[in-house]
Image 1 (spheres, rainbow, N blue to C red):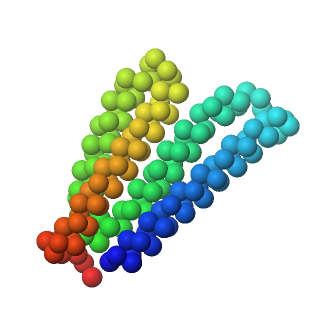
Image 2: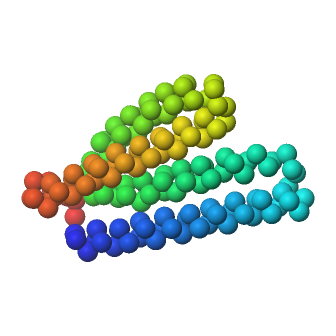
Length: 141
């Protein structure tokens, strides 16, 4: 199990870095396409929203990568609960942030939801791994 955790951590960091670099290239590509006229100049405000969306999607991808541990420990119902809690946070964030800040409020609320989901999922996985290591949790094999 320790080797699997080590490999997953390495993959986690490699994918995070790779996806962030890809996001930077996407941002640069959009900027260049707008400047040379391939894309209309009216899309220039997207340049300011896109970094938040890129980071949120990278975080979302990391949640999906770590979800294999939930299946391994047969705790997918707890993952569902985390999803419901973060959905509630998302509704609250949209209700509070969209009226005053518009699309920026929506995008920041989305980023908050994704980070909250990632943090809660990783905390639960850490707890499950500790219980498994102590012999108090059975896993499917």
